[in-house]
Length: 99
Length: 246
Image (cartoon, rainbow over all chains, first blue to last red; front, side, top):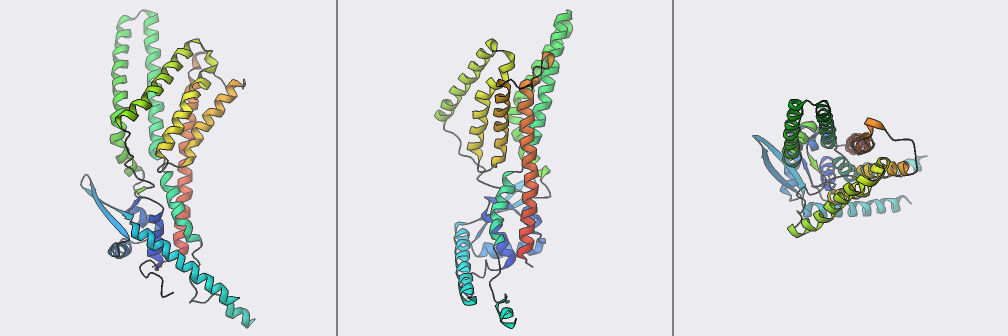
């Protein structure tokens, strides 16, 4: 468990990264509404993911309204894939112990 | 029994995230089936077709009754509406598309399944695509003069179906395969007509033989896509809820 990426290995951030991995971009409202997060909660977790370089933030304007979209970076995708590989390895070890 | 207890899951075991691996799939499916703007476009198409049909009827009536003023007025209105329609198809809908999408999905936010800046076709490729398309359409109209009106819809299927499939292939990263229901149903309808199924309108309602499959199956595909996006959104919310979080 110590090898698991602590940035990704957090339930909310894992959901965020998994959701972003299926699409090109998603905006703040979609992530908040579909994953049932509060504004502050989402902002905090996205800042952590952005700080780790896993998520790219795209800020635009629609008229006078600011729009924030997110895209999973290549690093983020690679780290997510590595996370699942490690998790599968750990679960395999757990299954072996139970036997 | 205590031995079984010790084999049960403990807090130190890694979480069972089996279902969470489906989250990218359902997010993508949701993004690919947000068809409300398409349904709106189809309804605009239906409304525009109804206006064209109405104007055509008025022109015919005015001409047959010898009403010159009415005939000229109807022609002017038709010409003006045609110009407006061309503008709407080429420019207008693009202007409203993004705004429409934002409004229709305001509470759900924006999500893009694939890259939105589709690589534009080089100029030469555009010509290579346009020439056969124009030839097909012209050939169709020449054949239509000679072909029994009963077979108009099957004849249109020869170019409508490949056209719809080609559009989907080009935009498949952002549009789900459910929309292929449109060309599939259109083809089935054509086959049924050729086989003599009693599904044809006659007399003054003959135009519906082509119009209904075009608009009807398109609207059906759009509606099913919208319903599927509701289901996908429910799956996303369930998966996120099951995964837990703060």
